[in-house]
Image (cartoon, rainbow, N blue to C red; front, side):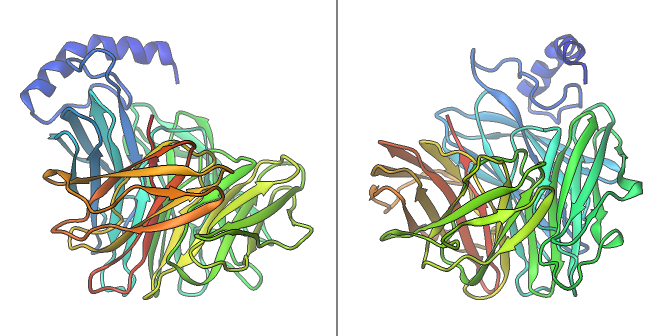
Length: 454
């Protein structure tokens, strides 16, 4: 994609964008994601959050947008599908406020783009399936398009239907290749090499048409490799136990933190090594009172161009720290089961940060939710919380907490008329934060990472 040409086009339409933003009308598609918003305060950030959430017939969807800053921020929401842009709307998100916006989630190709003008926002997509007992999933929206994505869990086993969701929010066509991997097979389907995705379209690729899992195949991953343009990829899986959705990982790395707690039963850690040499990994569980190595004493290995699924020993309410001992980058994700049924997928975070914005993983009808804060470092950190609701700052009852090094804590969020977001700040070190929840009246379980903030 020619970046100079993009900047010229953005400059040419700047005055038009300024007028439309000021008027509050629906914005015409004149600039692509991450174009600067005219009229924003000097130095204020503008950008886009991209949500390849998918859906199913009869499903419902919402995007929750949270503003952790001291001033109102303009936002533009564009819904994409297999036939192109479905709708565009513009609105304001008040200072320290969250908003729920209903979006289409009635087809596997459903995707949403959230652009912001004049200040940082966070966004998470929530989809609710029709008629399934565990039918709620949450997916953190991604801050940028990349040329490579690892979608870690698109299962096609018995009674499972997996879709690879790819969105192209730009004004140029995109071309990409898809590689499917299980523990036993590697496949590059001809119709997906390359796949051409038109500008401002999204697609839900039915993985079941290309690979059905058999005995000894516990996981199925999809790698999206860009040839031309840029896309964002995610996955959605439908099964009798519910619905799961998660965006892809844009990178492989040598260290991953997975802040998980409140789940039950066996955990499944999916590790993908897309490189050319074997990766030796170790797994450490970091719980409320201590940490323990939960891989075998000599570590675990994942061969070159291989996927493996591990069942690490359980330490109650413990997050995981996964490291490649021989510095070979891998991608990881954790498959979890909720306390009342339903499953969720949780991607790892390849880096920690001092501040995280965590948005709800619940539909507007609400439920119970808790934050999971993992301190993977060696030193104690002091963590404070500010709560964000639909009417502004929430007077919360969450007091600051001290988290010793190599520990994970779980913090219940207050229940109100609507689920709330939280801005979590650590002093003395860095953390990784996620949210997990189960919905009112449903045996559902959803989890997703928060968003690191500067």
